[in-house]
Length: 427
Image (cartoon, rainbow, N blue to C red; front, side, top):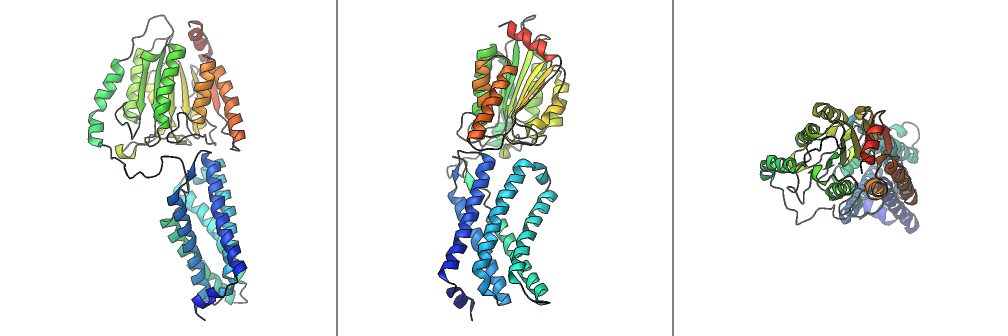
């Protein structure tokens, strides 16, 4: 009997159950991505097409394998159980990605996790065949080879990682390439303009010199935070004339100097050269991140990421004095050990092993940025008490949205408290 004839004889009810299992696997993938990235996104039409194509390729692989083994009677059951297993694995793997990111820290580890997931799926398929005697080995080999080959094609060409996206992050047909040559030609002028605008330090008077940096070019929320944080620092500490701004932005690439390592190092040196012993440097960096890595992501400009070690070395070389350093990114708590010093207050948006939320194009604030600056620091000029307000607000928002707690962190050096008290007492 031909494959087409066999498929036409599959009862309607098992076929509908198999289709429902495929839909469940899609819903599980969406739920897992919502749990990881947070609320506010939407289904991507391209992602839905990729999910349909991926599922079709996998089903075609099952059809081929079962046809070679003359066991097409198992197709509906195999599709149903395989896609239900895929749903469970999707939820588990995304949870591991959020809770144990170290498992995905290197390509070798990613390959190992993927191999384990594939082994579980192959084991299910071989068990369903229940071939007697030596036929078990033959059936298992045939099914494993065909399934793994089709799964490789599905993952290579029809990724569903972008099934859930945030507004304005999908490909825009009106995309305008950045003039990279002009961008780099403008860097010295842009940095010189920022530095020239700095108000001189007033000897003997505690003042704030600040840096606001947005690291990711394709999400406008980071540029928005650079500007909004600058305004809040001016309102609370009269720092408006002493704020350096660096930002990667595809939409506004030359509004501020690039947020790359060269400009960051220079900005820190300029602050260090102007900061008096009674002054406080307020350094704010916002972007994506992973353990001990802060993203400086502007692909067209060829920027490279900042490690915790890089940042610590820049701070040493700049000779910056007492400082409040706020790192707003996923896994930013991993920066605390490298940056800690007696005259520093280190605040991070998440624990070393946790993600933070709210990084999306079109938003004005990330979740932590809004809680710490727009709520906490507007309410209380003391960053230590502002952090306490932010910690409670972040926990409430994440609980309401059913998200895994990001657990923002604060590390306080022994000497920074007295410096902050003098600054706050001076109004």
